[in-house]
Amino acid sequence: DEKSLSKLRRLLSEYRLDKLILIGEVLPKLAAQFDVPSISYSDTAAFLADIRSLSFENATVLLKGGREFHFERISQLLVAKSHDTVLEINLNALENNLNVYRQLLPKHVKLMTMVKAFSYGSGSFEIANLLQFNRVDYLTVAFADEGVDLRGAGITLPIVVMSPDESSFESIVQYNLEPEIYSFRILFSFLNFLKTKQITSFPIHIKIDTGMHRLGFMPDEVNRLIAVLRTEAVLEVKSAFSHLASAGNEKDREFTQRQIDLLDDFTKRLESGLGYSFLRHIAATSGIELWPNAYFDMVRLGIGLYGIDIERHDLPIREASTLKTNVTQIKYLPASETVGYNRHGVLYRDSKIATIKIGYADGYDRRFGNGVGKMLVNGFLVPTIGDICMDMCMLDVTDVEVGEEDEVIVYPDIKSAAKAIGTIPYELLTSISQRVKRVYFYE
Image 1 (tube, rainbow, N blue to C red):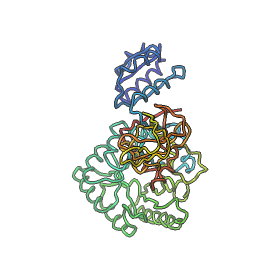
Image 2 (cartoon, rainbow, N blue to C red; image 1 turned 90 degrees about the vertical axis):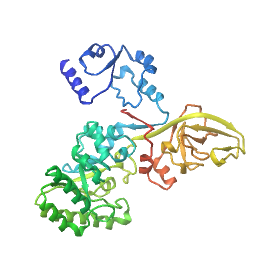
Image 3 (spheres, rainbow, N blue to C red; image 1 turned 60 degrees about the vertical axis):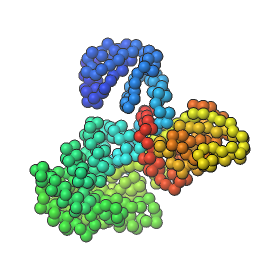
Image 4 (cartoon, one colour; image 1 turned 120 degrees about the vertical axis):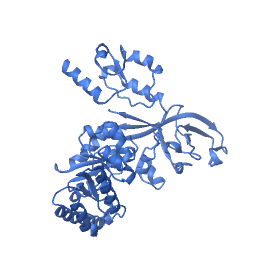
């Protein structure tokens, strides 16, 4: 009907599509009404027959259609056309996790979500777009460039920049980003910049050091901070916040409570001195799970959104991302042969060795070599053998039925994998190279 058609035209315009592929009997007849270059096919089979002639390089592809069209056949072929190592992001799992954490919060508590570091490796715009659709209150990035990219992609939510520097001020103002102010140096520098632009009431977020000792104003600097902010109409404090250093450690509960109390005291004095209220926040994922008295006015959801590294195992969280590759070649080698660089992979029995398409240039750490890393092949955990190469590595699959092109799950348990090399899941996720294709799907 005309109402649905009008809505579709609006969406196509809003998301600025470069190409439209129409499949079926109805939509191809309406192609002329869409202000987007289009190609039409009578059915899915016709499109699949032509897919090899189409280019999807550097493209984000949205598949939308009824089950009768069997678009899963298209997604399978699109993945096959790409680099064989992919990071699959389950959008249903992301939305589930978002809602799980929301249900822990009182209704008045706002939600800030972290999309820094390429959204923990999962893809900045795609995740930000989902969060915007689900009406979170704020997004947070580490650097202004990340915020600029999100604005260019159509993200309109408030975006906080956590590590601004003088070179980023122009972009911050131009793209309506909101900087974290963590020292008098950055405060005066930003004030002077805004004055040259004759800008007033620009939104900022005050970072307070309550014990993390990374960035932030110290508690005894509150009076000086009030004096500066009261004399300047250039800035408007939107929030004041801090960072819990050890919210998930039982032994540090007293320290964590002291941090919460310090934020409460600092912000009450700041509000009294400024004469207006602002949002207060200190709890990130672990704080949301374990410290309800730290919710204040807003919380910051980071790694918990992806279902990883949670403290409370009673929460129905789902891991949202899966790093996959496949078997390129299988070799049968006799005992005493060696595998890989430096001949570190010594065979002590006749062995079956699989070469797979992931290496340290994809973000698979070299420390996983020589049996430290374990991957899942056809339901069985198998160890690496030999050193990790730049674009490939080898697995000992002697005891597993496996064929070339079979699927390999790189991190069957990402927390165990991180522990094996003395790191944390955050590092493994954010280290996944951007050359690894991100594939987003709804179940």
